[in-house]
Amino acid sequence: MVGTLRSAILSALPLANIATIATAAESYPARPIRVIVPSSAGGGADIVARLVGQKLTERWVQQVIVDNRIGVVGAETAALAAPDGYTVLFTTSALSVRESVYRKLTYSTLRDFAAVTQVLSQSNLLVVHPAVPARTVQELVALAKAKPGELNFGTGGNGTSNHLAGELLRIMAGINVVHVPYKGVPQALNDTLAGRMHFAFSSPMSVLPFVKQGKLRLLAVTTPQRSRALPEVPTVAESGVPGYEFTGWMGVLAPKATPPDIVRKFQQAVAKAVAEPDLEQRLAADAAEPVASTPADFAAFLKIDIARWTRVVREANIQVD
Image (tube, rainbow, N blue to C red; front, side, top):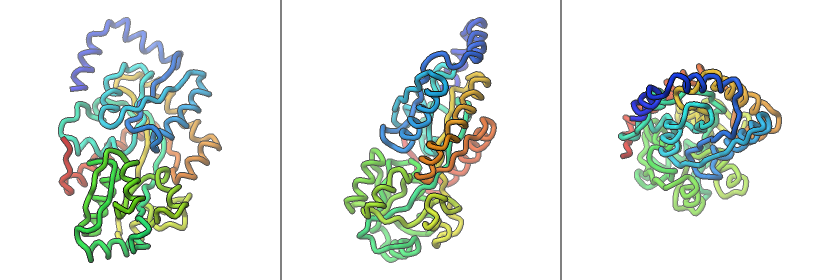
């Protein structure tokens, strides 16, 4: 629907207007830029978007404004925006998951967006409430097998990336655990902190402060290799679930017809931003690895990522209306 509507809009534009858009790439950016973040304020993506946005504001002397549009609405809004580089989407791996989870999406990531750059990759962390008698992934799996259907994990909702991380563990470890969806990650973490949820998968930005305070116990990272920021923490794969991998990401996309010159300028600016020492150190402290990939590389990555999670979603039989 979005793709059809976009085609109709573009075909209705006078040729002079299309030429104006192309010419505007030379002086881009000439006014403030809106960055749509499809998550609530204070979350991991929101924090990184604001950090990167501040760097771009300083570089371009044009304000970068973060606009929080939670969930599918954020991507829908960005897909329908004018393809002039003044509205972009700053999103996470949840974008790939939604492609196969939602039955009635009005947009397609590969059809309706131009890939700009993968900003970073990041491990999720597997944490448990301190009352759970498991100090390793092996012990958590053994506990779940001894008590089928009794352990639960909270997430930010059906089809979210932390839900998929939990489903992947359930499938690969062969355990029976209960998924409890919340309206957002903060609510899920609150109940995990209170002991109403036994374990959770979440971003380092969200859970590391509680781990340091002793309010959550960190068992493992979800990436195939250990994190440089947390070298003492094992991976899920080396802790009893061989082959397990869940690597989260954050990236920037623009409406499909955005001029390539503008896409390239945005990618180059983001690459310079995440390479600055203060931002690089901040990301490393949160177990995030800067990527700043080219538009072509990010587009190829998205195709693979969407296909991978489509397989997991089908096996787990996850659907959201």
